[in-house]
Length: 434
Image (cartoon, helix red, strand yellow):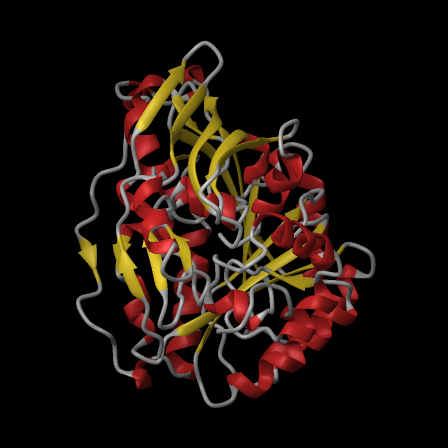
């Protein structure tokens, strides 16, 4: 249990007023899974009221907005004009500041890279009250260190980002059943050349000959002349507000071995969609359709364990990791597999290789198991996504991110007294302990 003191700034001056008294960490819509935007017994600046559009260059598709602007707000405003965010993660309830702090990625990382690739520049308030502009040519060390920097260098105030021009808000989709790990790796490599978007669901309970089985979903943005007539009537259709929700935390016993296996079968059926054209809402943000979906894990909650490992010896390492998970007694509920492109940045998570994100309901066995999984990922040359991590140790973090010293040098330059701090910052020794 952690308790932070939250406030909702509307400008840099209100952030500075609090910063003169205590440490703080900026927070967006709180879609990170652990302690990324908590600051026990200290302040959290919830920046969602800093959400104004400031300028729009339609000729070049460049939007300047405040950091508390969400992807949903951008989609709602610019979708009907024929523009969408270039990089979309698994939820639209993400702020621009949060997208930078975690350098988010999506189903097209092998083509588009991570969020840094659509950001031209941003302004940031430092610990001493200065407001600097950071870009690839101005204060470039500050620019690169903020992508994956978990909000520990300052409060991002505004950003200039590039949007993607679209003809429709639909995607042409192809789904295929995958029989085993060899089939999975062969398919993602083959179709990466013809589909911009690629993601797979893996049955992490499968063993033996079915190890690595699942469903691969591929897609490309649909052009207007490709749509069937019934969809052409509203080619830039927006999502409706979801009325589905989980009203309360389900009892812990609901997620047992039997129900997890049943849900895996349901997920496999849903993922193997026969539809040729899918709306962006279902294609990018399937979980957004259910409000408070996390309550399905009960009050004990869950962790999302996401790692990336190099392609070299990837098949053998993935096989060993999946076998380790299957034998652990920890029942994975949702498992998403992707192939990633080249990485960049200092603490940014992605690099060229294979990534698997696994939802583990919290259990007695989990705390003892994740260090074993960490060791296996590290031995494969991999690392964990800090934007979702909740259990990594400082020593393991340093081993997985050997470039951390470069980031700490930037931290000492711009925040020498550790005025920006958080629970994960202290846990990973990226900021001083209270």
